[in-house]
Length: 102
Image (cartoon, rainbow, N blue to C red):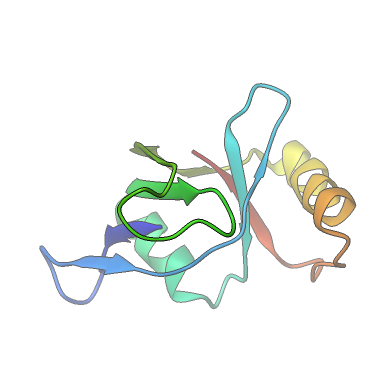
């Protein structure tokens, strides 16, 4: 995921992130409130997500780029976002994680 760095105005900040699709196919992310991802998205919700097929590499890699605005899920949806990620990834997330939808 790449988004604008909140400290270095005008520069993108890219990193590897995990996500799961919701029932409509929208990517759902869960980040710690302390994470740089969270601070950057709160300052500017615009971001780009590049998704590639595992195991592929190089120029022949099957990939797609999704761009849009990532916003925190509403308060009553936060638990659903964390439960969805936990169920699909099999990892228990910290209860204070914040979930976002792109």
